[in-house]
Length: 181
Picture 1 (spheres, one colour):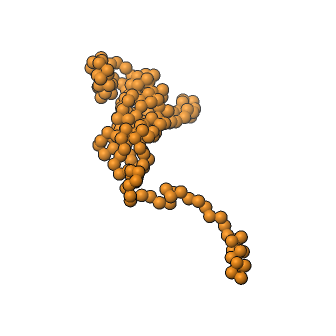
Picture 2: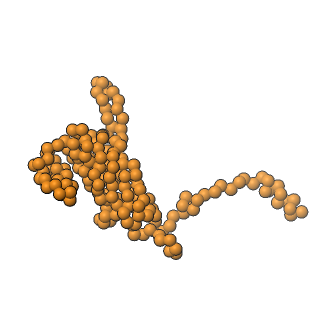
């Protein structure tokens, strides 16, 4: 008799949906980590920072020093470089060598970062170096005719480097294999 009652309820029941543990739970201490840094974007087609931005010129001159090229800011006369801020979010549990996207934003008077390449830069979390970033930028935005037939570009001074960040060392707080919670 009991099997008679269970059989219809099994036939009418809905199939259970599967969910991954990470979709319904979180581990204490596991969170995304925000990174920040600064760098120099080169390869701009006369749309970079003007010579009035001595910080950009000094940063570029500093990049040449480890290569044995000694320059001062007066030696550099170019609008093909721009000083930028870098931000990134590293997913929780990322291991050394993990790749992630990096957002690049102009900090000077550059008109566009289109066509630029970020020179090798360091990213920091909690004021400590944890990652590096470099690579070609993809500048967001669009081109369209404005009301007066002028071209309009949306945010040409912000770009993205897809997979351009590399975690160099694991961030404290990540669970190690075999560690108990």
